[in-house]
Length: 360
Image (cartoon, rainbow, N blue to C red; front, side, top):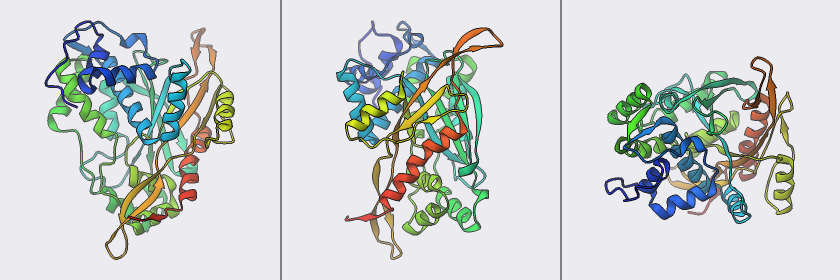
């Protein structure tokens, strides 16, 4: 993503200017055509950009990255655009591991709170995911929580599993590298302090932040992967996909209608709609994509293995009357039961692929 030759586009808002600088004007326009862009992020062109503009730019880049990894999701989005609709990006989900060696990468959610806090995010809920030995935390943007996509950041707890499992997690993750260099860390500190950055610094920081949402460690061997999969489909997924978006979510008015329409098109979508305990949040998802990752067998030879990748999710959120403030709000909460039901999309994909080798 070259930023040395900035485009001569003085009339663009800061957000579009950053995207055009990083992607090129045509590519940036194509990405902008996919998504509803919050009015709060469309600020006039200036030499300094705010944290909300940087957050929105990162979210758009992450959404596009997810679409490249999930063909069914991309097909759905392209259908929506052709029908004259834009996607309302609700949240992205990613996974981390706590309490074990993670190499040069900070353990657990600390690898991402150092990014999310400077961007203006704060914890908006903690969700025990006991059935899968994880804890989820939702992060909402302080400046525009209803319109800026949230992050659902989960931590897996290896100490809940066997000693062999823990040793394998430690071996795999100990190879992790940290994509945030000293200069980027300094820019994040400056952004957290000032809530703004000079435009040129924001353009230098964004590609680094984008690279954090990826696998930072070496791929496991086949034996290591199977050891992890035997006890946790979630940890097996982390071993091959790392900190990439596990899924991105489209906020739709009626998730049931969307599910029926996608099912009629023959797309692999969950049969069950996950409904929160308060009834206001309803979710479903496409089945996780299958991806190919090279792993070493017992003889040290590389074998192409088919494993679960990421997926695309749908959510409907109702508005409600906040009794404390007597104001109407959008229910931005999550639900532990919903989350664990949605996370089964990884497990079901793992069962379908059976972690099978394909020809090299």
